[in-house]
Image (cartoon, rainbow over all chains, first blue to last red; front, side, top):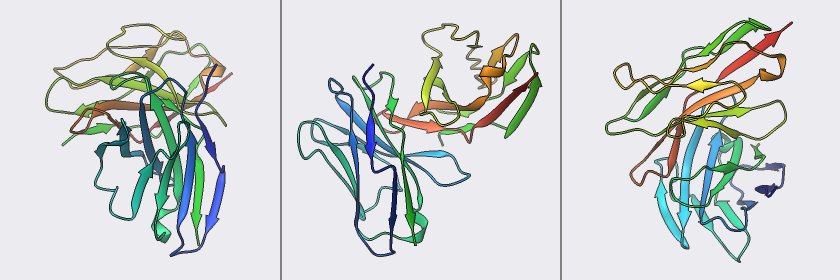
Length: 113
Length: 110
């Protein structure tokens, strides 16, 4: 069964550095998403992406964040200048269409030191 | 404001006992509600959604608009049901964002 994959599984970075988290959505899916979960807190929506542009974003998704689909398979989340509070598990998800089931990846644990 | 509340952080039951995981929501309009489950060391996966009205792995959930609730129920818990359960609603401006509750850990012991 096709699955969403994410790399790396764990990323450690220093405050102020740029990080890129990578995701490969399920191949026939059209909508892509990023969520994050700070330890002990709820899963929070960051952004949805469709047809090569942002469909919707939350207040968390400020100017330090960006998303891109650089080729036909990858979907990336870039954090320009990481802060300590960016430490979290980041989940990628994809869905066939707008109101369809969202399939989640295993997550990337980002640790900012 | 769009919000999902799961009041219990942990629910511990014995095998064979009934289970009810509570979920309340705040949403203006007609919400679409989901239960997601995360088993140990596995990814988040959809358990059920209210529009399908299915029973998955013996779990059911009924949307009660009057009480703004979407509680998850199972008449007889099994040990393999032990997991983290998240209630979520489809919200945001474009309806693509999943708004999650904090989750309830269900622990079923023999």
